[in-house]
Image (cartoon, rainbow, N blue to C red; front, side):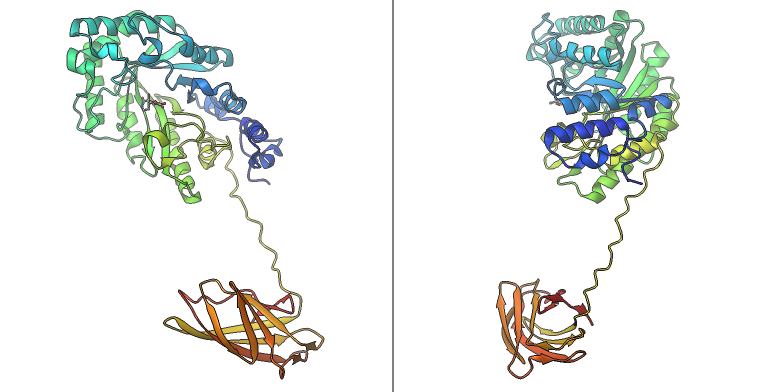
Length: 474
Ligand code: XIL
């Protein structure tokens, strides 16, 4: 059975399409599997979870991107198109072109639409930062109300406030937010209350990063949610961004999700990616798969976890290389849209049958036809060495005149020989019989040798031929 059999059909389609477009050979194999299982989208649906991706508006017209997006995901969030600077670049002038692309995409494909984000210290047009406090408050309220109104009934949940807490992780409020600076702690409750007034039904979330484990920052978020609940400030969910360093999904991730859920809010992984130093090797991709699996397993183990969204779709387009120099390959689909080990790990976490470990076909031993055997015995010192080569004629016929060839691998140079004429060209060495030892009867042996210099390990050659036929060792 092919190792690709259990891939989602949609991944196969997408990868096939991508291959067609991009000339990748990868998907040719994938496309052979007509009995492929099912997409992440349907697997996730069976668990009652959303599997989401952040949509980059200017990529959706690319057929391969669109194919993977359509088939694999059940939730879409705008990577940038619903941020403040995109929808209200000029005070009071709203521009819905990009945000509508995302909303319309969700509608036409039947996907859940997640809103990101209403209030954030970044992606903020400069006019916002220059306002005095009272006007800033009014602008914030107006912005929230207008954007929430526009997508009322279409957005399932909004990240009302994004990254309210300090980057230093100590649990303090973010000092570099104009909202925090001018409006103080109270802007958070005010933002949530304003959003609730605009749409009584939409879920209202607080979203942040580095709060996946139990730590000072997640404690602070926890205490804020707890106080909102205690004082009647509307809050429905907490988003854990999940921008992970390879191998660093915290051990207490699930427990942390659970303690938030126990406060009476939904939880969700909102921006998952697992960044890898480039170029990513097979071991790193396997670790990444384990990380993705762990994230999904944690979500599945917490009843109030609504799903997992990756921050992007393909390694071809991801924010990671731009923001984390030398790192990337953070998503489930590679640069050619082929599903990575992380994809399979997620499918399996969601209940797909385990993918059989790809079996490398056992190589058929390629024994040379009976012809010759060789032993090579080097004797090395510092940078010099000698080597004794013994060749046996294993064939049925007498050899009349012989040429033995082999190649060096680690910087050796022949300086002279005995019992043979030994010459070297690049790494290739050729030894021809001397006048007195050119005849080798069946079963007969001949020894010759040479001296030389070496630059490193003086590794022994591995492949020898006698008159063009490959010799056995021994
Ligand atoms: C990132 C986008 O992916 C980039 O394209 C953009 O240049 C900067 O913002 N946390 C968030 C997201 O909440 O909005 C950020 O998205 C990534 C970090």
